[in-house]
Image (tube, rainbow over all chains, first blue to last red; front, side, top):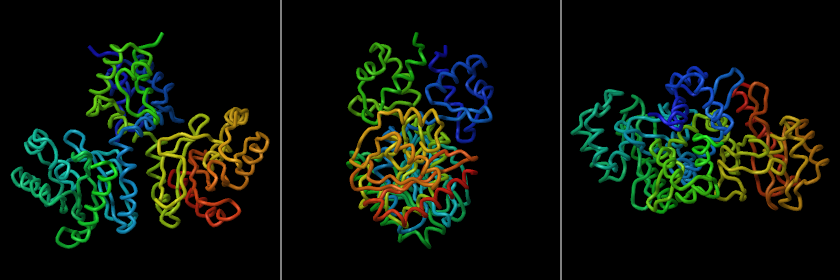
Length: 243
Length: 243
């Protein structure tokens, strides 16, 4: 049986990156509750500040949720520690600089600096992506528990470009190499014109996040000069977290 | 009577910027529920991802809340629109650059860039502050509904420094000047060594946020060169929001 609380959380779950604005009937449908129940739950959440109604009668996630989320140590806490190092890396390179954590079998991006002239990346802050093809994902997967690695390697491994590694055996070798080298390189695995270099962020010995830079080009051409900078910045963040 | 949902939200409300990590009994006390109820609510929130347990058995806000909060238009949505303009302003000045919205009778900071060498400010992302003494707060208060202005002016107006304006009549004149000039200057009203310049961010005609730069010094000495930069950046953000 679904409790009242389960239904309340289902109302919140109705809001996604693809559908950040919903009408009352859309909320009812997504949460699987009658319209009258949705009405009551939405009223409760709105008076708390968790939902906000716009001029056209649609609902969006409210600032109270954002404010609470700012207390999440893996969200804003991590990001506050990382920001000075990300700013330095961004200022020197003017390329995309990204910070991500692992949520289950996906990457969740918690911060991103993107210059207007930099190569296009598919990620957004608060957005998710597959682990295997991204630089940050390779780092996070390389240091994930064995059962997470096994589940991801069991597939399916989605192909984004001709360069995407979809062979589990090859991916497993790549992960071993990431652990050995202390950084990951994703060479045009997500888009045809971008390569990323990523390095692990550690706290009390565990890899809690990954930092990357994404630049136009391929691994052979452009990536070397960035490796030391990304690794140094990631170590700086780790130190400020208490590595 | 308190509903199940009210209690669930009270558990979330137990977490604050001053107390971001709580034990189960602290949660029970803060939410005003028996320990057994707190245990069940915390379990529900944890399995949803809204709370996370640390190694020492304490609870913190979970990444799921952060992820949902990223959908709030006044949080991350506003911040995404503002980021390129804030980056430019930061890169030119290397001073503190802040973005804030009004929540009730307070300022809520949604983004902040702070250089390591810049003057110390008392604000944090996700943190709140009084409206009246801050540059961003003066802008937001100047454009707030009359009943908000009346309530804030009715006091008490807290004093932070000898410069803090605590006289309601003087504050009201200051707000009129902010509307006339299109920017606000808070001259050492929060700390003795900092002055801030703030300008309004508009969306569909309404002031939805304020942008500021906070520099070491006082209004007479250092503030002039920054006024145009802050106003131009705030107009840029407004334009990208659809002013």
